[in-house]
Amino acid sequence: MAARTGKEFLDRLSGSRPTVHIQGETLVGGIQDHPAFRNVVRSYAELYDLQHAPEHRDVLTHPSPTSGEPVGTAFLTPRTPQDLVKRREAFKVWADHSMGMLGRTGDYMNSSLMSLASAADWFAQSDPAFGENIRRYVEKVREEDLLCTHTLIPPQVNRAVAGTQQGGGKLAARIVKEDDNGVVIRGARMLATIAPFADEMLVFPSTVLRGTPEDKPYSYAFAVPNDAKGLRYIAREPLDYDRPRHDHPLGSRFDESDAVVVFDDVHVPYERCFVLGDAELCNGFYTRTSATAHMTHQVVTRTAAKTEYILGLVSLLTEAIAIEQFQHVQEDVAEVISTLETLRAFLRAAEADAEVNEYGVLTPAWVPLNTARNLYPKLYQRFPQILRKLGASGLMATPTEADVFGPAAGDIHSYLQSATLSGEERVKLFRLVWDTCVSAFSSRQALYEYYFFGDPVRMAGAYVNSYDREPYRAKVQAFLDRAS
Ligand SMILES: Cc1cc2nc3c(=O)[nH]c(=O)nc-3n(C[C@H](O)[C@H](O)[C@H](O)COP(=O)(O)OP(=O)(O)OC[C@H]3O[C@@H](n4cnc5c(N)ncnc54)[C@H](O)[C@@H]3O)c2cc1C
Image (cartoon, rainbow, N blue to C red; front, side, top):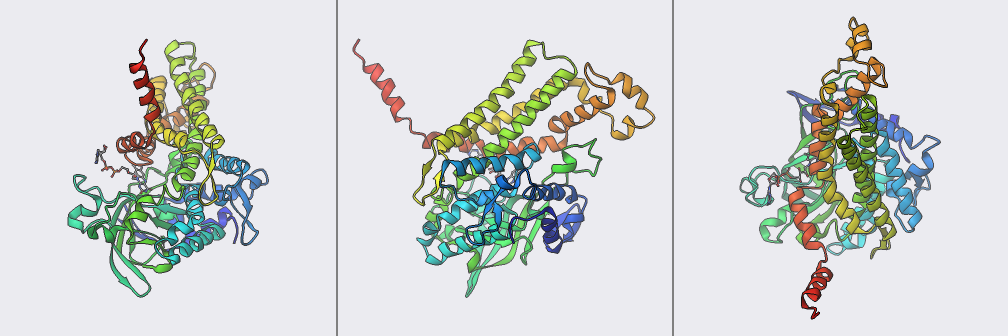
């Protein structure tokens, strides 16, 4: 099978039987029609349909190196600058479809998988079979166009001790048994976005491992089908309240769902294992394979698309109530513009300074991408603040569709008009602003952006430690030493 259509995505989901606990219910399948998921899975289906739309298919797909059939562009191994541009353009088409609100679209994990497969030799260091396993697995995901998510961090129990030591070493997902054809995993990982409707769960390393015997059961990377025996998800309360699109324009489309991941003795066959028992390989998993750079290329493209959305939204808002002439309003709009232009500049720099890595893959430059991923979690927090400040009481003068077209229609038409919009148009716009800066959906978006790549505090530490500051120290020292 090649790049899927939306129908093919939904058909596969309807045949899948993941175990999902949600609001007191235990689902075993039926995800595609459940009120918590049916809208967002349809948004995902639309993305798959775009792969076949005449105006997008050339960007969103490329011929598979094995079957020659069109497959997703995120799997395109970049060798030339044009390949990197094509990858970015494809990321952008999907990101624009959700205004950047969907963070786990297939291209995110697929970018990582493309990079991991190209570095198969790196996995083979510990056992040649692991090199073959990652290559074959990525080929499967590519050819079947599977939707993957990942779960990384251990349960948040006691952050004063290492992840492997949570609950005395009895909580975080670990290998408890090895048999002739695989390993058995028991324990939990904290979270996985889109877990209930993904096809595959990637259980990759995240925390730094010390290579001690105690760390060995936690040193692994593997993938399991979403409905593997013993795998359970505990989903959070949905933020899609099954309200009309008019009332919850974002929440009714893009609530991705996040879930705790429980492994109740899940058997993982060897062919789905990529690292086992090797802490050093786990610690270098993302950086030595360039996976982080390719994932971040996708993420910065998405966050630039999201910032374009914010800029469009804030512009419609200030125009609607004619506040754009005020200087502090311009200052806020300028902040959104500078964030957008900063992200674009990072993307451009990352592509312009791309280098071929040791596996022959043209890899976007890391420093601009790393800078972008350190900045955006904080910059994004300003957007809801700005929208709330500028929207003010208008964000509460937001009756639902039933009122806009019900008995209050006349009052709404006259009293809620704006400088440029009719009452109905203004309510529609302000409900979108509300769903971007006030609703529970918007709050989850802000949290998501803040923690997208991990804890920004610890990321900053890693950023400082990895940045080569020597030339600047030397420059200042030379000035101090200058005689005249
Ligand atoms: C909406 C959402 C979706 C997510 N989706 C996914 C997903 O799909 N897959 C996935 O794997 N993960 C996902 N995550 C988890 C995300 O990776 C983590 O939130 C992030 O890594 C931070 O870890 P934590 O939440 O355990 O915070 P903690 O590590 O528990 O930190 C809590 C607070 O304590 C502070 N703190 C804790 N330890 C230290 C320390 N050693 N030094 C300094 N400060 C410390 C932190 O700064 C923070 O303020 C998601 C998170 C959110 C919010």
